[in-house]
Image (cartoon, rainbow, N blue to C red; front, top):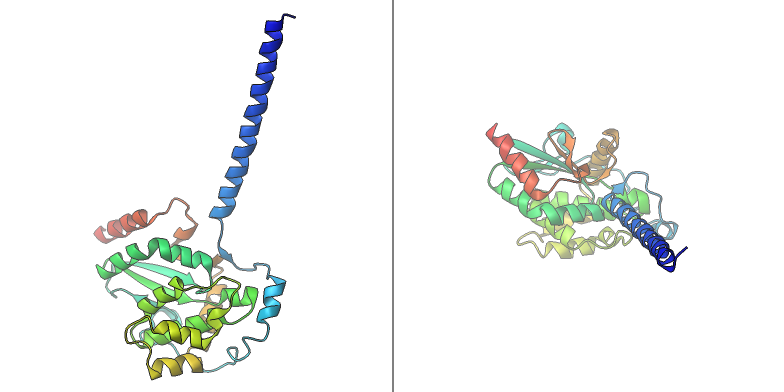
Length: 258
């Protein structure tokens, strides 16, 4: 065999090795993207033992049963939805969310400007349903207490603003900071006119705790896989990886024309 032929075969083998390495790298990247895109606060998530131990007992006060008191203006079946937008809007978006859920925060950060625009223009109404999924997964009471506080803000006509403040100040998922009433009241100071004696009493008394629990049971009964669950036209658009704020806006506007 000539030296030239040996060099050619060696070069071919080297190219093959390089190509295989590229394919392996691409496959690893593809898998990472799939895993990253699938991040969601899922029902049945295995609890982190250390976190559960740290949060054990923190929710005893919050778990006391009381009468189911729906917040002012709540609508829908069993008055479990807090509406944002006009009642006569041609389209409705239904959102099941948990204030401790990182995926919910990511959804809000990406879609908030579009949702505000569509709601303010009368094209879309958003029905928010509050659940306490992370409390069950990791222990603590931050999901419940934050949801109760948001319902108290609804009583004051300040739900949307306080809702946005909670997500803007969301602690780490394993940090039950929202289980502290003082923290929730302090955040109310970021919403003009919300920090009142009535709001503070509502938060400390857990006025809407049983209502939040009822909402969570409805979430479970609905068979939803996790939070956020975002329904438009009966379809969970959060699971559609091609969905974008612009695409949602187009869907809402087309529905309005129909």
